[in-house]
Image 1: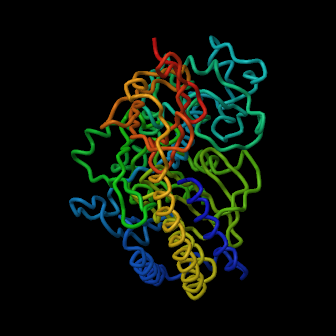
Image 2 (image 1 turned 90 degrees about the horizontal axis):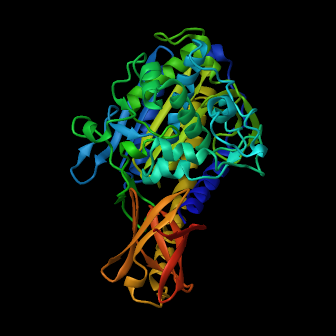
Image 3 (image 1 turned 180 degrees about the horizontal axis):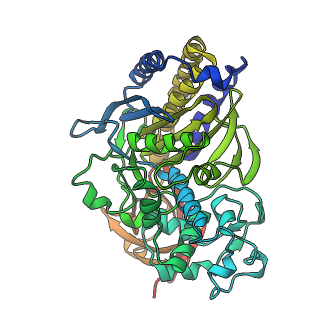
Length: 515
């Protein structure tokens, strides 16, 4: 349910944006001479009205930067609704898949120094693994893995790393032998997933002894002095740094807290960072400076700029920001006559927008601790900023108002749909035929791990590492609905024999009772 609703919101938002991009853009020279103080005042007025129109949004932190420093920084709302703690530009948000841009740069820096080779293949890096011949392990390189062109699928590597935390190096390494070729997106074809980044980190750790967390910290966070960013030590850091707690506004009303909080065992190489808006602005300033030939710290301009250049090419114009290429952690596409480089991140209770436009010398980071209203609002903030620099304050104000009203209408419909769906779910009959004790126990799957079914007040409940859910009814025999990943309902069906459950199928994968 959650996925379809977010896509619906994005579709409505993209429609609004498509009608406001007809005027030619000014030259880059003219764009660099704009009055940034006027922009900051206009932008602040727009954001104040935007956020004020959606009072359920927990918080939004926005920073706009140029290659020589920040020109706007402000936070709205609360990082913690229960305590009333306000968000600030130094509040740490979970930034999910935008982590890929950091790992892409870290590996590019190591490649430039000769510590690794982005053209190393699966076969070279895992000579002890018996890959299926049709994978072409002797041709799949780190560069393929980091650009989503690897042509691989299968196994529970990405799921274990991102959601359950049930993994160790030996388990993950064994999973490599269970990889399958992606028939729909073969080697050389772009298909966005987390799997490539997860495999790349696993291989490089085995080869060099360095974990992906240490790579990002040494190669990126330390040189850029990103002191409010981290990839590990999350539980300890929560006691000393200001974190934004996760919420969802994909509700009938209000913002609801989300139980699924990131810990070290679910912080993974394709989405495993917390960072502040101020810190990400430093990262974006380094990208902009590199496009002007200036390195930052020990990061050469050529290395930074090299990560922007597309490796994969495709044509995806469905979203607010059209994409035609993917490099080492950066999507790219033309917006208002200029190339935009960007990456987004999403997870229950989190939305991250990170982008920059070299021709206008401007970059935007927008972070929300919400996976509902926060998703399009973060993109709306960036869209307004780029329109302002490309076509002026009047065009930005007019189109910003149009986008806001279109989204307000869209979200009203979405929330009505949520209320209807929840009511329908609650009205379904229970179709379990045996006492709960007949279903309880541990069920194992070699790829995905262990599901434990327990009796919670007379109803089935599941636990799977960090994931938890109470069952809801479903109108199919021996089947229940589980929402272990908040906002994403999955079906769980039992196989019965001899008066008890002997196996279950969860989200299409079969689990047998553990020995």
